Structure formats: structure tokens, C-alpha cells
Image (cartoon, rainbow, N blue to C red):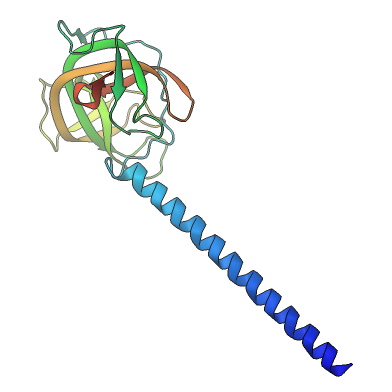
Length: 196
């Protein structure tokens, strides 16, 4: 009887130990996967968090924004998005809704709603700056944002990180995760490629 009890207890200890090890392994796998996904999302745009970005827009643009005369991607044409500002963008086929010649900026700012500072946000155009001087502004310049792409962006004081004169596009697309996006602002010419 005693021998059977010892064997039973020994078996129970082995089962509990194996279960605990299996649980540890699952936890490690989950953490690794999450970490890898995080790296993939931030590799190109380190510091950018677009989790509270409204990917769709109204389609309204500033009245002073100049329509591009000879854009590489004409309004109504299709292009492939080659950037990953947000999950599901890269590789999606876009329809060009608008093409404009302007100066685009990456900016860093603290949202007016509080929270962590947003670093190197892509993109804000010159016409979305409050009382801007002549374009392009130099990196390090301080500006007020009038763009509302993300919660807490409008009215925030921002620092210009980089500036580029180019054609920007407003696009409609269905993300690779299945979300339909309309009037997305902005994608630059270098972030698009022709469809095959």
C-alpha cells in the first residue's frame, strides 16, 4: 500500500512539473512573437505609434495646397504602397484620390491630450502648420500643428525633424488586414510603386 502511494505521488509530481514547464514554454513563445511583431512595426519608423491614428480622412485639403500638374501617379490610377506607417499599409493596392506639390515634414510632438511624446511622425504638410513661414522649414524649427491626423495632434507644438519637397498623395486602399481606408493623408511619391 505504501509503495503504491509513493508511486502515485511520484507520478503526480512528474505531471505537475511537466505542466509547469509547458506553461513556461508557451509564455516564452508568446513574448517572443509579440516582441518580433513590435520590431517589424517599428523597424522603418522607430518611435512612431499610430495606434490612435484615424487612417481615413474627410477628403478636405487646405485651400492653399497646390494640385500637382504632372504627378507620377495620376488621380484615379492605382499604385502599391511601399511604406508601413501603420499595420496593413505595406503591400496594399491604393487608388490615388489626390496629388499635391508641397513640402512634407516629419515632426515630433507631445499630444495635447497628454501621453508619450510622438517621435518622427510621417507626414505633416507645410499647409497643416499654423502660421508657417516660407517652406521648407529647417529641422529644429518649432511649429504649431493644425493637422488632425491623430488624437491630440491639432494644436500641439511640434519640432521639425526633416523636410522634403515632393508630391504627396491622398489615397483609398484596403489594408492587408482587411480594413477599408478612404482619403488617407499622406503618402509621398517615394512610398508608392506602380502596379504590375
